[in-house]
Structures are given as C-alpha cells and as structure tokens.
Length: 245
Ligand SMILES: [Zn+2]
Image (cartoon, rainbow, N blue to C red):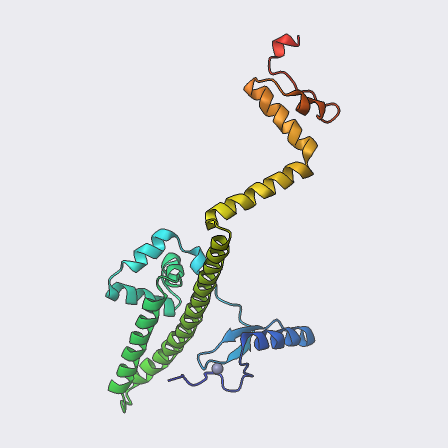
C-alpha cells in the first residue's frame, strides 16, 4: 500500500523530531540550510528546497467550512484532488483541514487512491509512450495522495485528542462544582469576584481615583471615607466647572 521511496538514497528519519535534529546538525556543520519533509514512503528526509506554504484549518472562515461541508460528493472530491496537486482556492484547502471535514476528506482520498489503482490495473502491460507518460505523472500524484492521507490521519488524531481533553476537563469541573453545591458557571463567576477583590486591594489608590472620577461623572457626592483615602494631589474634582470659576 505504501508507495516506494522516490529518493531511496536519502537518509531517512522515523519522526519529524529526529529529522529536525539532523537538519539543525547539518545546517550548523555544513552551513547548508536544510529542512525536514515527509516522504510518501512514510519516512522523513531532508531537503534544501524551501517549503510550500501548508494550508491551515485556522485560516478557514466559518463560511469556507460550511460551504465545503455542504458540497455534493462529486464537487468535494474535486477539491480534494486539486489540493493533492497543490492547487485550489486557499479557503477550500484550509476548510478541508477543519475537523468537521476530516472524515470526508479521508474517505475521498481513499476513493481517489482506489481510482488510481484501478487505472494502473487497466493500463497494465501497456507499453505505449502515452501510458509511459501517464505512469510518470500518476506516480507523482499517487505520492501526493499518500502524503495527504498521512496529514489527514495526523489531523484526525489531533482533533480526537483535543476532544478527549475537553471532555475530561468538563467532567472534572462538573464534579468539583457539584461537590461544592454549585454550578460551574457560579464557580467561574465566583473566581472572577475573588480576582476583582484582589485587584482592588492591590491597587487601592488607583481604584479610589477611578471611583472618585465615576462619582464626579455621575454627579453624585463622594462619601467621606473614600475622599479621606484619595492619593495626595487627587481632588474629587467637581464636574461642575462653573462653580470653580
Ligand atoms: Zn522516501
């Protein structure tokens, strides 16, 4: 199932981390800037070619994500095929990587691989020049499909881990709140109140100044206990400027 390596003589690394370490080493020793890249053979190699920008789910707008999700299969598959060739609208390519579209992306990649394999089968034994050309292009395309599939699997695993983490802390918080006889919302509000109290105590003079200004703006009289503690030089300035003149 795994395509053969297009560069079997290159050093191979099992993980991105190992490849990154090797890249740093070579870059330092030989002054040759190298970067790791994932090969269709599932290993990591090093290259001096700069990376093509990788689409990121975070760049997709909600409209992108919903538009892609509502496409019929035939159009969705076209987006998947274009992305595998490094083409297509940036919004579509980013939305493809959003967790809502990952399962469908994976399924369509599998179908495109199946189609490709079927075409290989149909052209088996065909020694014409046209088929020779086709095989060369098809090999590159097949490599890209394999790479996208591995990217998709990685994103799916990340999305799954993220979901588990969210479930875990929601459950934990609900238990803590229930033990305290409150809801999670009440506890969050309480935490906010505690923080505001501490902030006020840590910045008393500043707080009193703001309070005096707010009283003045609203045109009500500042209580003596606040006025007494205003920082030196601060006046509980009366809003009515005519009375000062
Ligand atoms: Zn390889």
